[in-house]
Amino acid sequence: MRSLFNSAPRVLACALLVFAAMPTSSVQACAVCWGKENGKITDAMGFSILFLLVLIGLVLMGVVTSFVVMARRASRFPVPSDEFREKVT
Image (cartoon, rainbow, N blue to C red; front, side, top):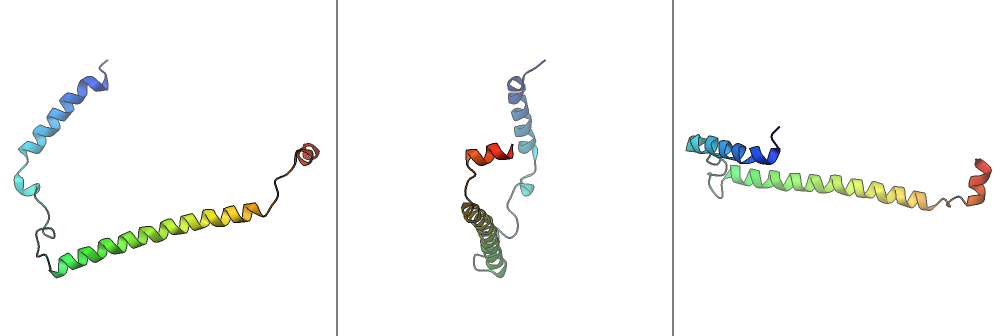
């Protein structure tokens, strides 16, 4: 049985051969990246990236806020003592 480390150079060589055989037009950047620097599409892409960053930040803030609220609620209740645990069991 071959190990993964022995077949890794073959896989890498095959991948490099496949990428080298590809036509260069499929490797180039998309039309948006090749567009005008101050074009409408470029501005739209910039605003969409900004929107997604803000959206991710809001979701993460919601998760953090949930944990803070749970921690505050949990701190209101005292930790049961050993005597209480013995009575329950």
